[in-house]
View (cartoon, rainbow, N blue to C red):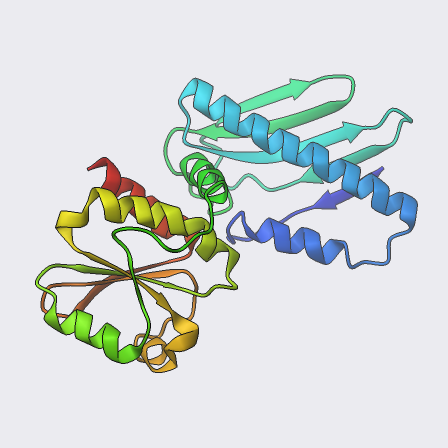
Length: 242
């Protein structure tokens, strides 16, 4: 049986993809690699099962403790993780081809690697959005001079989406940002800034992650920021529902 033990030690669940990518760099034989890829497909299926269970039973988070898969030719593949917050409701499912155990949580558990159902669903929604960055309500800034002028003359809050054309998450965020700008056009000014064209602005506001949302008040003062697709998406979703 091939067994992989994932111990996150407090890192986020998204680190899993990096861990798996690293494992694929190991010198596995063709048959072992085929088995690993088969197991990963099964693993992702269990993650979707966890999402469905939480949505059906009203849970907001879940953590996978263990899953074991059996192929038709009798081979087995096992994944394990550590449950740091045992307060969740355990759920186990067994069939002839797989066994897995999950912990389901109503409130945020004391475990950063637990899956956030709301955030996961939002990322799926964002990933299905088109990547066109042009839209009514969003003004794309062409120079640092123009940007500074927009901030200086504004009489309302300014929301600046910092992006790069070569950044896939930035493209996924585009139409979500556009929708927000259309719905709340009377509540502020919505700008899009290609940071490749504005290195001075990027350095001044220390924008190291893309996409990043910068929020300025009507006085031109930076009052808040959100970085990364999921955090910006969650912020916008809250604004749209308010």
